Length: 116
Image (cartoon, rainbow, N blue to C red; front, side, top):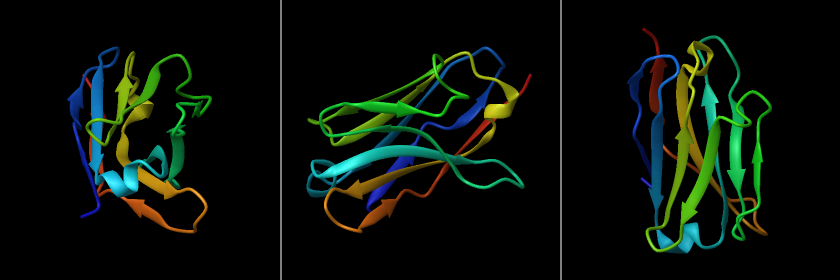
């Protein structure tokens, strides 16, 4: 497994959760890292991404609530999810897009359920 995602679980509306995705140094250092999600019956969508120089982009639906970050020392990307809503319920996947190539790697997905 090239990317290992973790941190999913059950959280109440309004609560917080942090997802982590670790990979190898050779992939991490050369990649745009991103989180995607797929809710039941819906297409996978980009949630947030971060470049090697820490420029970030977010889906409109999560702006102001989610924060993506990367730790170069740990080859890990995080997604801090605050003020979660039931519509955030989905399987969350991390990805690594090697800059300058067509190579893209995916993690195995971690389920986030927002429910009271």
